[in-house]
Amino acid sequence: MKVGCDQLIDILNHIGGKEVQGIDENWILNYAPSTGKVISRIPKSSYQDVENAVKAAKNASEGWAKLSKDERADWLDKIADCLESRFDEIASLESLDTGKPIRISRAVDATRSVTNFRFYAQQIRELKIEHFRMENATNHVIKRPVGVGALITPWNLPLYLLSWKVAPAIGMGNTVICKPSELTPMTANLLMQVIKDAGLPDGVVNLIHGTGIEAGSPLVSHPDVRFVSFTGGTETGSVVGRDAAASFKKISLELGGKNATIVLDDCDIDRHIDSIVRASFLNQGQVCLCGSRILIQEAIYEIFKTKFVDSVNRLKIGDPSDENTDLGSLISPQHLEKVTSYVNLAIEEGGTILTGGISPEIGAEFEGGNWITPTVVDGLSPDSRCSTEEIFGPLVTLHPFKNDEDAIRISNGTRYGLAGSIWTNDSSRGENIAKQMDTGMVWINTWLHRDLRVPFGGVKDSGLGREGGKWSLGFYSEATNICIMDE
Ligand code: NAD
Image (cartoon, rainbow, N blue to C red; front, side, top):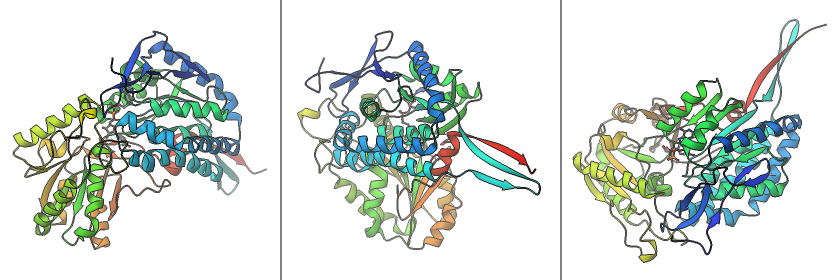
């Protein structure tokens, strides 16, 4: 066994405030994506581990729900402080575990994970009971905890997405069982250490590791789990939605995307080109919001193409721990194989690879990693498989369009509807297009510019429900109306 660290780290489940091995004592090895070396192992949890975690969450439920919202907000701030004190460690572990550049894991992952706890602490403090006065009675709408919940997350933004769920869920008085991706367990483990160090009551946050089938599925189906918040692929989301629906659990699904980047003929290309490249390739294109189809108005197609490819060719791919690196490795050999298969498919479908699609030369240390250069494809039909299926990697397709209606039609021509961006000097023209795009989110002249108070989520096969601000607080609570007749 090749080992990436001095010592193989055993990462354990966290149940009722204790670190415990999986009951079956089976393990899953965890590999560093940039080198292919083993860095840790996690329990291959099964039904009995899920059962124990749900029991612990249930036991903690009553005491936790009794706290006032301000007391719970204070706990979120305390967790934020403890997380912040380990900021550099979060960034390094996330970079090691995902293969992403350290600069990105610091600016995006570590920063947002701390912010998520602080943000929801504030939101929960500001939460007000709503009152509706009638002629002879008053309604008070209170928000009560839902109960025990399952929080299931993917590998691309591990702690960023987990903290985005844990903070509002426990802040609203629920207790939870987290099931992070089996490919990226390191920072979820760190979060549990932080929660323990902060002194949060045992059992409020529990965590089990393992595969989706053996650990995730029994968690979703467990009769005592009352809500499921899932972020991951559309196919998995469909299974999770079906399993949760059988017992009427509350469900939130944040799923895949095939987002369009629309470049209008009045776009200031020189001003925006770096932002459009970032929207295409941040985190090696492994962000659900990345624009993987770039629709360019005919008049500027050639000039945009030249400048875009030049800019992509300047991206520095390599050692994730190097501060100057722009692109790291993909998450796994299986994912590399998937992305490579789409490079081959692009050629079969009649496309031209303008740049990328090959293994970069970055030194012997990284030979066992999952590497591919950022890939730009021209000449494909917008209806081709490559241009409509989610690849979730560093591959974008370029497509010319005639007019605004044409751009809207192409943009709406997939099963997905997560996000999109429009680049133009005329923001009212951009807004008019945005209103006709079947997506949950559209950015104009920016991308991934997030105000945490606004709704986040997709339409069509990109998901169900919204996260963010009051939308998360609504999901992680039950609204109960108390109507009091005047005396
Ligand atoms: P995935 O669906 O394979 O796995 C996500 C999580 O679900 C993992 O923890 C996995 O173990 C678990 N899981 C798998 N099968 C399960 C089952 N039957 N029951 C319960 N849990 C199960 O997704 P992934 O490959 O980890 O992540 C990539 C996908 O996530 C992409 O499609 C991407 O677009 C999507 N994503 C969406 C958003 C969003 O906010 N919309 C954000 C990030 C990633």
